[in-house]
Image 1 (tube, rainbow, N blue to C red):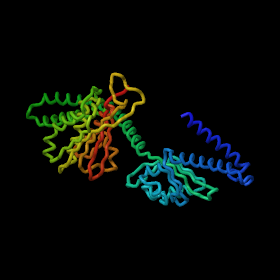
Image 2 (cartoon, rainbow, N blue to C red):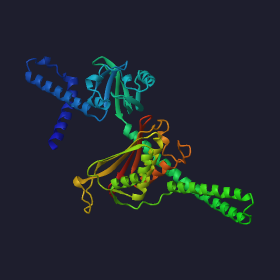
Image 3 (cartoon, rainbow, N blue to C red):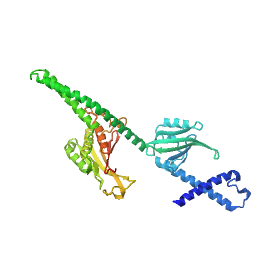
Image 4 (cartoon, one colour):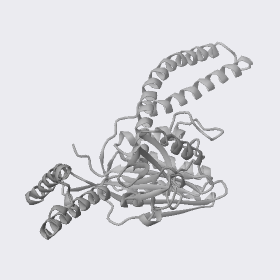
Length: 414
């Protein structure tokens, strides 16, 4: 390692000294001594070192790099650009930068904006399409390029894939929104519950003073029924706002899934729904509250049944996802290779899917697409998974079904 660092220092020192000498003595112009072959070879080696050094930097920076002419035609691309967009580097050359923008009108405005003198654009976010037409959220930094030596004018683009960051940002915002709604709703629900109890008690006392034949009995029964209905809604709301603290333990996720399936097997058969499970070998136990996660999986199963009115397929898959530890695990736990795992549970249906414009809202309280739904099922599931130190996400395509993805911890490292 030391020798590598020393070598880099030598290159930088040589580069600085040569560049300063070149201004006064003229680098690579041995006209004063045309037979000095050793000097020519030395200078050629130096130029080669500088070339390879800059090439290494350009090819290994953790970002895609495009250089385009003023019309947006790509004249240079590094290998990371090709990797991000799914192309070979040579395939990117001669393409126009606008070919990668999802919105072509936005691309035209972007290129026009960069044609302004000395214009720079920082942290610009947009959507690109890769070779397979998959959407990628991209962050771009761009600036004009004026290379007088090579008589070239154009634009330098540095871009990074922000899809995962954008996704995580949305998850954090959703969790913050749910937490805020939970605190607010708990206070409101508590204040509503007290007067409801008073209304019900007063109605029952009033009913005791009436004869059985009195028509007002029916009205009082209606009042009591509506109060009970409101109380049931408040109880569901409390499950979301203030779930009971989890009672953690190690459990087999396959056993929990099988218990839910046995409960719903008659209903699946009645609705002509085929059940399929695919469990990866050697799945570790998950560290969760068994009852709460069973409730979550049951809710996802029931939602799948509701959307497959004419039958279909309900598939559940499990797999491991490795997480590396920076520090050693506690001695009382034996974890191979100092790795931890999440267990990923994917629950897929072949229903009608979820529309893109509402997919970000499905975990919000009281949002529902069902005629008789309360809109609390998925918000409660999300809250319970959060309480169990897990994560939940959804992937859906209209007309092709929906997949809910649960990430459950196998071990909690304090």
